[in-house]
Length: 148
Image 1 (cartoon, helix red, strand yellow):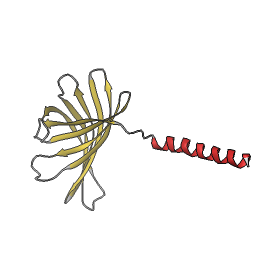
Image 2 (cartoon, helix red, strand yellow; image 1 turned 60 degrees about the horizontal axis):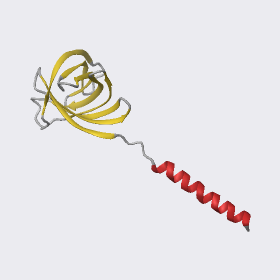
Image 3 (cartoon, rainbow, N blue to C red; image 1 turned 135 degrees about the vertical axis):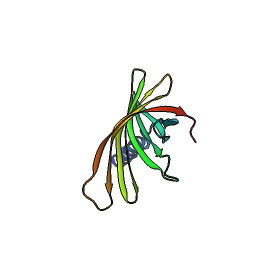
Image 4 (cartoon, rainbow, N blue to C red; image 1 turned 90 degrees about the horizontal axis):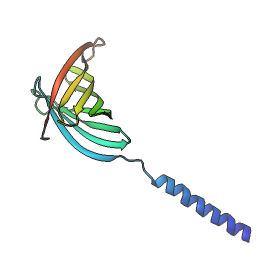
């Protein structure tokens, strides 16, 4: 009888231990939503930033291009704080018929002014076409603005 009871207690303790590990999520701490306007055309970049620990961050958000009413392009990426700069790699892809396009770039934000730059490459392909155009998007200035 003692053997069965000890086994039962051991199983219950193991279950509590396993449930304790499963219940601990490694969710990050949401820092907030920040917005910047690109100086070369008025496009707006909006990023929600989540702190994942140490100097590591996850970013997600959207880019709202000026001139394409109602269109929003999702953005994902990750970032690091290096000195006084928040540097994030961002990726986005979108579709406005007849074109599929994307962007791979780096956002650098000065943590004192919250202004910065974005630099990267973009591509565009016409629907159904296998050949795409890859082009350097160059550097653009980002000015911190209140989020719309």
